[in-house]
Amino acid sequence: MPNEIIQAIEWALTQTWNNGVDTENHPVTKGISQPLVDAVREYFNVKNIPYDTFSYDDLIPYLPAGE
Image 1 (cartoon, rainbow, N blue to C red):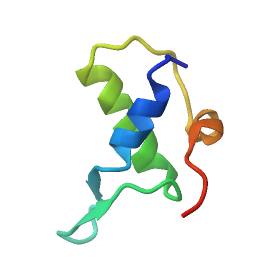
Image 2 (tube, rainbow, N blue to C red; image 1 turned 135 degrees about the vertical axis):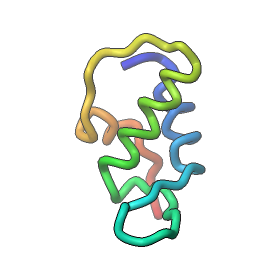
Image 3 (cartoon, rainbow, N blue to C red; image 1 turned 180 degrees about the vertical axis):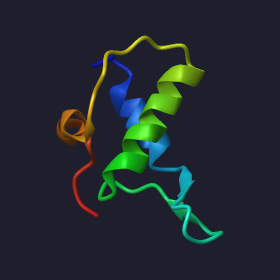
Image 4 (cartoon, rainbow, N blue to C red; image 1 turned 90 degrees about the horizontal axis):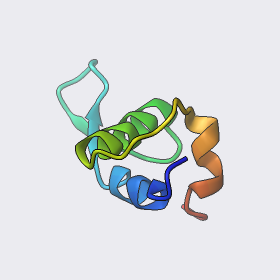
């Protein structure tokens, strides 16, 4: 994982996503895996940070405690 993973997760947790079922945007949370992974990938892409394929399981060690 890139060194920027913690910053990427912090940013991702401030984003929203749409579930496609309703018109509301929902907050990205650490408990909903795919939106979190997608947001972290978006962060890396926007910042031009190279990364290998990763999954939610790869992010778990970097997730903030609590909540």
